[in-house]
Image (tube, rainbow, N blue to C red):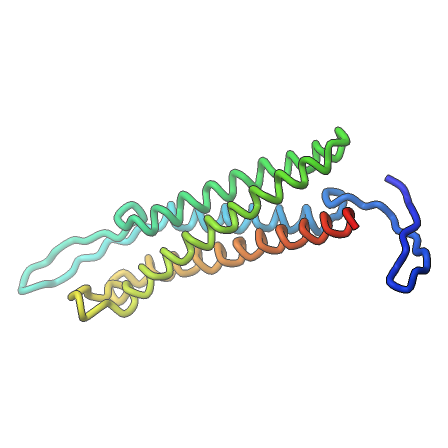
Length: 188
């Protein structure tokens, strides 16, 4: 790492200090924050379970709400677990690449995978949100009853996990944008 002169828009030389993307503390902070948010989201949904006794037609039924019972919530949980695991691996890769001197290749690979993880998370968040809206409001056209009035604690936990995951998805988006700016400015 060093410094070099680079012409600016006016043609004047400006001293630019080379600071790789992995050396910037906010890049590592964003990656760690994304890891934390997706981990917390995964844990909240994985541990979320609510059992209620529901009166229906003069009888009592025991019903349980759990993440395993809705495929969209399973997709949401697995996607967050994948994103969290990847965030751990990418933290290690970015730190190790800086030490080994192979940072440009690592930045490119990590940026591409960040983009894939971001898309996966936004997709899972959309699926979970759609199921959440049906759980909150129901759908009278297909005779789906709302369930969040019964399983209110379960729905609040999934909503909190969804908000955390959306923030985590946005952090992966910021990591991609940050990496693209870095790659753009180092190539020009």
